[in-house]
Amino acid sequence: MLSRVAERLYWMARYIERAENTARMVMAFSHLALDMPRSVQLSWKSMVSTTGGDAAFDHHYQRDDERNCVKFLLADLDNPGSIMSSLSGARENVRTTRDLVPSEAWESVNELYLFGKANAEAGVGKRGRYAFLSEIISRCQQITGLLAGTMSHDHAYDFIRAGRNLERADMSSRLLDVAGIGLLSKDEDMQPFENLLWINILKSVSGFQMYRQHVRRRVNGALVIQFLLQDKQFPRAIAHALGEVESSLANLPRNELPLRFIAQVKRHVLDAKVETLLKPEELHQFLDQIQMEMAETHASIADNWFRLDRAA
Image (cartoon, rainbow, N blue to C red):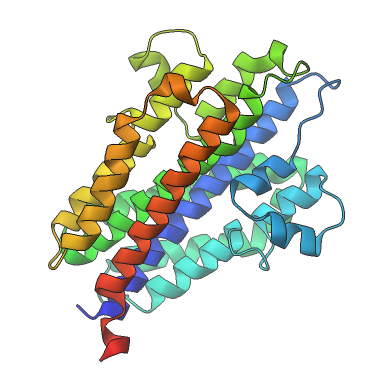
């Protein structure tokens, strides 16, 4: 397989996962806004911070109100992390690798992009938001299942699996970083609603039901952090996602250096003492280090497999 083809498959998976994760986050936050009393002012900008898009947002918008923040995350093509930017990137990458993926996958990605393009603006408004985001999530899951169920699990699929799960781990770490720090700061206005806010973090990754099944205790910060950080069975927990990346990279040739990077970050996640992460500054420092190590893993993957054609 050509290195540029492997790179496009990897990024196709990352973009689809990014679109789904962003849709999940906006939907969960919108539901939270409906549950909270009017006296409590939620920061819609916190979602922008979760994606690392503060600089781009501040450059294009003067107010960080609900409509601007949701538009930035859903429909703004100047935001490389928006749903529409992600769908556009996924469509272009799968278009140029159509000979390696099932034809139904190309059709599904193309239809998803066209749906997003036609409905993104309507999804920004409160009335059409739920229907739009639900459709985005459902179609992204359909594509993920289609690839898993109809594509040979060869090296091409290993690059898809690596991209999808590295993106998933990154988003879960960002969500814990921003939301968890806000909750652990013990803001007096938020204390009565702390339980509801931790539940919202779980719902952002569709993890509330699995948390209740496996943890079987009331929701609190320490247990949510441990579940989303170290659970090996929940697909959107960081440890599980990193394990999937490690498994996919193990199948690829010349994998020694990328495997070393992914094993290191996975070990740091599993060895973390959650009781030491219950202070905002400690949690932020730890997750910042994990995000840096995941970025190094991505760079190692790119250097090892994606830049061969350019170097030739």
